[in-house]
Amino acid sequence: MEFSTGSVLSRSLSVLFRNLPGFFVIGLIVYIPLFVLGVILASGDPTEKSAMTMLIGTTLLAILLSFLVAAAVVYGVFQDLRGQKASIGECLSVGFSRMLPVLGVALLAGLATVGGLILLVVPGLIILCMLYVAVPVAVVEKPGVTASLSRSAELTKGFRWSIFAIVLVIGVLNNIVERILGAAIEASDAILIVLL
Image (cartoon, rainbow, N blue to C red; front, side):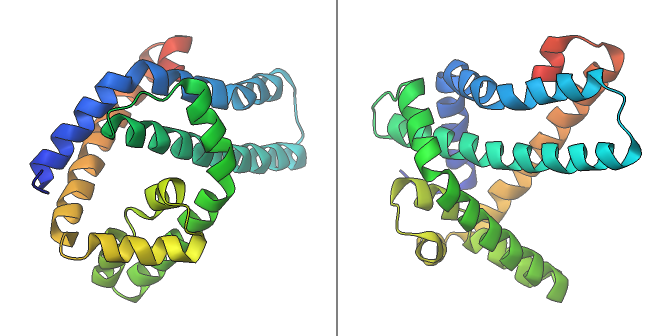
């Protein structure tokens, strides 16, 4: 299959829609502790200091859980691309086992990208495209944190303009979806919209 922006986005959307119910359930299961914590926090009347502590704790929990979801979904996508179906339990199991390496890879890739953006915008964008597949590498190939970054740089060589276009299109689509959901949340307090 040819690697182009259109082909990657088309295949990504078809994998997403084929697995949307399972990925939704994975996200729902993983984020249950965050929902419960949110309900508990909303029911109390915290002081300013305890509110800040709860906000920091909730944010850290949300970040940690997002890496669990990322690892689980990456495994599910990889299995789909291999023509196999991964169960929700299998995806969650792999997600739990790869969560910390994924966290390390994402942290280092994020720091490198931010460092490049601080120097000048262009080096940051190059680093972003170079390390774009570091998290999937950490989940599927399991080479270790720094080796995942090196492997990502190797895999993206020669495709970085296409990856930049993909990142741009996904960013625009993500922004549109966030605005639509944000408007829906403001217009209604429906719990389903908040969950989405």
